Length: 97
Image (cartoon, rainbow, N blue to C red; front, top):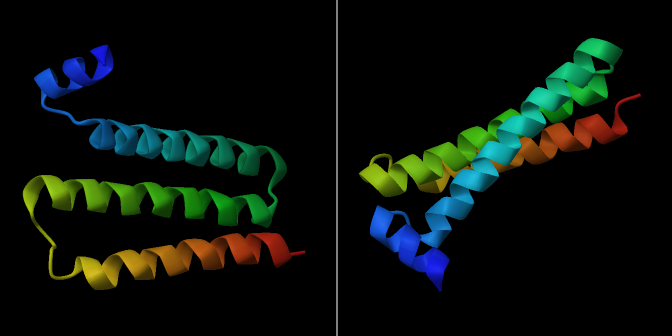
């Protein structure tokens, strides 16, 4: 109850705050993956790092388009393509030897 009052007064709703938290977490995972790749040079980790980066880009596009109403026509095409790329990268990361 107190949290909702704080966020409503600041102009952010709880959903936007969760989106920002997920975006931040995906950026942290991207940085951790890049660090792990530099230490090990395993291509599997590189695939995961790019997937985490695309995930944060996807969330940023969604958040930005909701806030500014830009890209509304293209969102139906852009977001599924990014999701497909993320899934393909994780797939290649799993099956890559």
